[in-house]
Image (cartoon, rainbow, N blue to C red; front, side, top):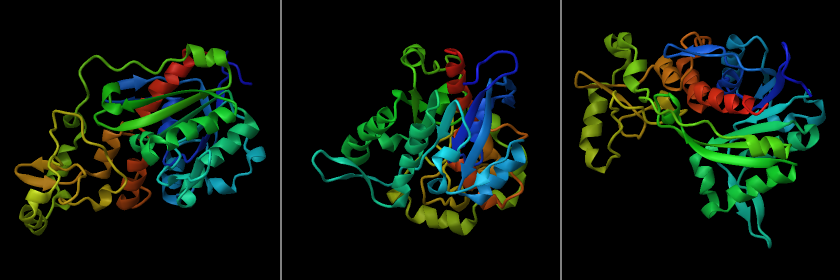
Length: 326
């Protein structure tokens, strides 16, 4: 087990790493909105994701390199030794199998992916793990799925803390709610851990991360035809997609590339005209630093990778809470 002394660090294995929001956050050493997030004593030694475009972005930004791999192809014994396992596992597909007692099942293959994380935990027994998921996981299958997921982690040998966190309460200009599950092999670690305190000072807001140059580029504005189409059906539509730039933004999703005025994704109103966010603005809203490189893949792929990511600042604060108990 790696100890924190001198230059030694705790080793991290990262499943479903995407473009690296969790991995950047846990390692630290980046700047966002003029604040420096110091390097933390964690080192990513293994990272995998099945999206080659997200992996391309990842490998442009980290010295250690991510593998393009389906987690179902991982042989747990071959994963390098590590002290902490990360995983923002997909969760669209859980169902409760009608048995007595009921057990966790899956509607399609994506629902099985969570079990791949459990397999690695059982085999490698790292000191900690951190899982991340959408708020809907708490209510999936009428609230039955989440307790079963927690039970699977406990059966792998872990004490569990979990909490629903809103990114806007941690210095991020986005109202993004996500469930974080933190597991501990040692009861002492579990007992001493506290999720990070919410930020009491003024919240970061959308205005701080908007690129004024994009306001001059016609490319980002919706056509008159799109606006007229929206106006014809506006009574049926979800209100509030136009963002108040003096507040945190609504959640950035992975399909911003296809954002329309008829959807629920956030858009901007600039001089009485509607425009979409640029990929860089989406990254800013997610708390990626300005020097995080995106440009080696298409804009569509940039939006997708950024929208699926964990905000690095939020991950940094959770990782910092882990450092406090070491």
